[in-house]
Amino acid sequence: MSPQPSTSTTTKSSRKTGSDKKTLKPAQRAKTKVSWLHWQWQLISLVALVAGLLVYYYQSSAESTQPQPYASTQFQSPEERDASIFTVQDLRGKGKGMIAIRDIKQGELIIRERPLFVVPPQISVSPTTLIAQNLQRLSPAGYESFFNLSYVHLPENVDPDVDINEVALAIFQTNAVSAGNDVGIFPRMARLNHGCSSAFNSVYMWREKEGVLAVHALKDIKKGEELLTTYTNMKRPRNQRRQYLQQQYGFYCTCSVCSLPDAESNASDHRLSSMSDLYTKFSSWNSRSIDGLEAIDVVQAIWDLGNQEGYWSERGQLAADAAFVAAAHEDAVATKEWSRLAAEWFGIELGSDSEQVMQMKGFVAQPMGHPAWGTRQVAEVGGPKRLFQ
Ligand SMILES: C[S@@+](CC[C@H](N)C(=O)[O-])C[C@H]1O[C@@H](n2cnc3c(N)ncnc32)[C@H](O)[C@@H]1O
Image (cartoon, rainbow, N blue to C red; front, side):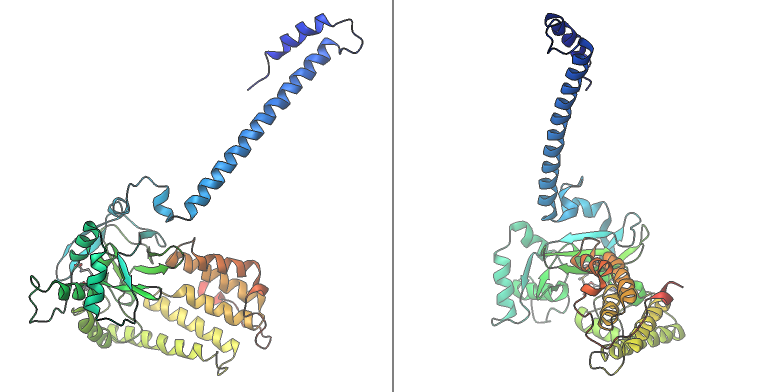
């Protein structure tokens, strides 16, 4: 807004008082009035700006306490958001599964979901009773979404139309995932089928503070690809994985890794078992069986094997553990570099707004603030340089 019109008003009034010595000359007055109005406007603008900032601050701090992606997007509901990313459909030999309806970027949030209910892992009543009790508390829609889920391993003598509690238990056992210290049911993410090592492209993590499970893309996923997660520890050979999946989930795994020709499958098994052994070796740094330099070499070796295998999960934690070792040995440069790498991978697996990312960024800024700092003998252990070659 311009204070233009005030100039003539000022000139008029100055004429009335033109003889007064204390009165400023018209030109000066005009200038003074203009500048006074100018300041008035500046003050009003400043007040408006501060008010705007305050509103923005309160809105964004209110939003940050809510599940972020749904609070401020164009979607009416989480289901509507899901439908913009994937579709749930019948897949041969797998029941239902999730298919990407557009390209999904690595690190993108696919699902964010509150549990239908959770139960503690150790219980004093029978599991059937506990689940029945939880089901009673659900809304009709929640109840329906639970009973829409698939199940395996219903005992042969049980009639599903009669013994609903046994069906509920089978559904729970087929679909429950860990939610912090508890185990919970998440009907939307429960449609994720399984794939081994390089075959799975999505990871789910419990976010304690918000009480939600978040599923992120571990890799770029192409439109039309199935979204797959992993149901078990991957770092073991194909026959052991298949045996576990058959026992626990009632299917014989034919994912792209399990379907490899024997020679390639053996090579994959070897890499996965070596990774497992290396993780064990790495943990022996705790008991001082290996020194910091060796521990970091082990991390590099795990990372390299992961690259060869196409197995990228758990890298945030691995880099964070390396940062811990580096900090313990007071290698500030390495602490920063490992923390930076950890932040990058936690960002992919947990979301860039996760606690872990914030914590790692803190160590990038202040490696000496790491709680492990200086708890071991000073040594240059080295950062993750080889990983980027
Ligand atoms: C958590 S549910 C996954 C969604 C399920 N397919 C459905 O229809 O709701 C787990 C069950 O899905 C099936 N499943 C998961 N991954 C599979 C795979 N790779 N091959 C065949 N069946 C699979 C198994 O029956 C398993 O018990």
